[in-house]
Length: 164
Image (cartoon, rainbow, N blue to C red):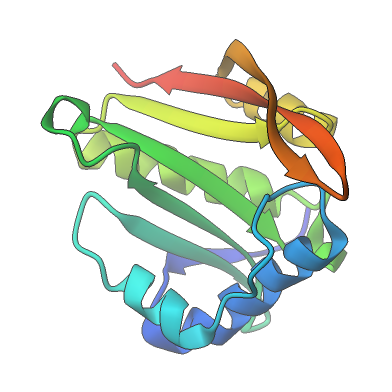
């Protein structure tokens, strides 16, 4: 485990966040996005009000990963439900940074009064599924052949975590 500082994301982090995400778009396997994110788009996402939240993990002032808490749905009945995401710089996996970001997500959810977190994971991403299980998420279903990547149908595993 390396020494990383986790903090709320600010506008100047937008380029690093988009760079990390764009890497994952390029290599595939963790998102269905095909359009690269721009720093400007990320900056707008970071500025959204609570319960949205974006966090970054920095090592020696370099952003090595980010996490986000976003609404699951705009429908009023889902106001206590969020969707979460964590993405790491490719050189930063297996170093405990994801754990720090997940801990920050959990703290934010509790403080914001969120009750239910959802993670949608491409089912072939076994590492991410295991990671979420270690953090108390449970598999509640699999959406078969819901997305398409590289001329192949992909399943998505739906996971949830309830905060008491």
